[in-house]
Length: 639
Ligand SMILES: [Zn+2]
Image (cartoon, rainbow, N blue to C red):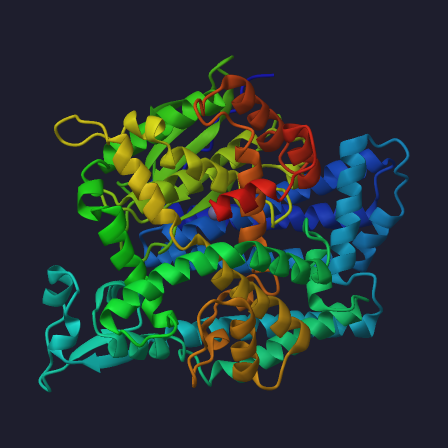
């Protein structure tokens, strides 16, 4: 069989037509595939799954590309077309999920002769159908569809209210004391002599980190925590109620039980238990670090008895500056964006046995660079990746890995895109860490992209596991020996190991109370879904008291602006869950030689390469040679 070749993207003018045409063709093919399956079900289970796989490749590829270009294409018209294509793909996918005749084709197959992968695929396919509600009677299916549609509308309204709900406070120029001069210069006083500070991140983060004035910091945090309040309160109540109804129509006790069924964690009760487990493990480290903050606060305010939420960023910064002596501006001089990119490829190429070759292929913007990826050992193609690393107008604002093609053995290569917003000159070290993190997703997508079944291709594990490979790769961006290889200043001097050690200490300060804050958010996400309490602000205050180290600010209602309640729903715990596993995975590597080829090879072959062919718990056990444990995370937290 000849080697597969990557997709050739269109040139600039042709994008709109390309997206519209390819998505129409793919969705037509998927529709025709479904119709053929129903009209003449294949004789064998394997043939049925193959037909389903064809359809899923068409539908999944279209959905992925539409989503990508709706976020990254520089032309607003193309983004709009891509958004339409994404909606059409989602609508078809939802129709197929509720198609009773199609479901009947799958329930009728004889699975006896299927191999392990085939049996797993059939099981998962039937489960997806059931979870979509296809097995319910007509009235229930109609209600499920209604709920789905309404949740889409509510989710959009919720997000829009947050997006458009920026608030601001007015402060005197004297209250800007402590902020960097360039920030002050960018915020002149208005005609009334006051300076407007908004709740948007570029304003709020520096202000909460550097402004000396505690009242002003508290006022800004209060403003941030009232975004979407009260407008989003009824939206949330309806959202929680509809999700609970949806779960109950399908026979689940709670929405969290429904949602957790397809995750590692398994059940709603296990979420509550996990939140408490982390909270307990974080208790002592959190108290230790809060005591440090309180000591700093008492320098300014001798009678202070506790640290407020609005003080944490500020006094964390004071502590870092005074005790840890990390000068962020100095650190940046070691991270030239071009060198960092080259270093990332060098490090990951060595670690995973990959060779990256820059190719002169058509791209959607001049900033984007394309690489063909091959396995170093035999030169066989492993896919293609595009790095779209710098900001521009209309582009996705965060950092993420997007799929361009799902890898399917013998049919199409995996292709992925890193979409980030880094400066083109010198980078902050936190950006370097983000780059390694996102590359962890990309390499999972590529290495896991040699599957026969697209369902198992790439990042196809349980959703609460997917962050583990990316969190693991962050460790390489914190290792002094690794950093020495590419983090060099203009004079060619590599970053000193003691500076890296201080950077690390500065980064890890507060991990206990940050874990508690994360568990407060996880508790909001879980308990608000479970209980849909009438008094949202009151319940928020109670959960904050229980889980966070910092007190509730009266008059605020954080859930009204907690955007993740729409996307993560009851499962905000997932990031921490992945981190527990990532720390355990990392414990298998030799801290003095992070490139040990045996460990790295085993990690590549047993965790990344299988994609979704096994449950994550088994992938992890295959790699570690034992079930995963909580110990490595707990030890890290306590250190
Ligand atoms: Zn991630």
